[in-house]
Image (cartoon, rainbow over all chains, first blue to last red; front, side, top):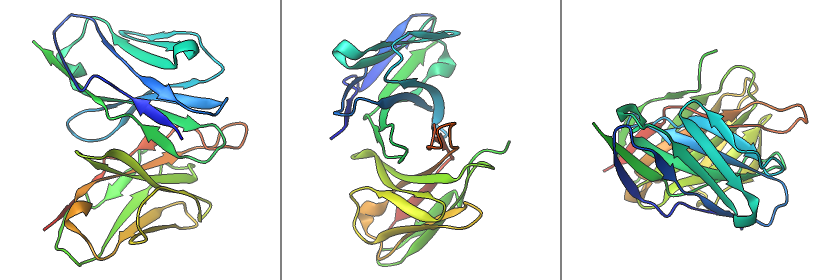
Length: 115
Length: 116
């Protein structure tokens, strides 16, 4: 069975600080996808990134960066120079790559950025 | 392109009633998935439809059902509502990738269901 663990329930940082959100996953599949989604107070899940299990390259997108380490089954997300608009719940998710969309989500990390 | 739309956005029902929620996917997306989000259980997968066929189902009782129409729009139905069914119900649509399999899911704003 697939499992995603986000051990950090809530994190508070002061604006402009860097923050890393941890994600550890379990799967028996050799091919899978990992995702990060952001859920602002409005409720809509906003897609941030998808990573294929064969692609371990780290990725940077503006202030966001992701560190995928297959050896430790981790897919961590770092926000550099955090801003108040980053305040949201962030979900890490895992899906099999077989084409059937059964996505397993972590429990989410609530990030509060204090001005 | 317009995003995933869900109607209604808010709904209040009483125990024992039934409810139907609607989801219109992004144009061209043929895969539609449904999730239930509650504070206690988090985000849980309900089911996924593709070309009017349910391909995958989560661990929910038979009171939860769904369907997909030929235009890819989807509905989910919950019969004999219970207090525990109060939740945010999220719909997500996916395009097919070059390999012909469903790709990244894009979510709608959700329907907030309250059961009294």
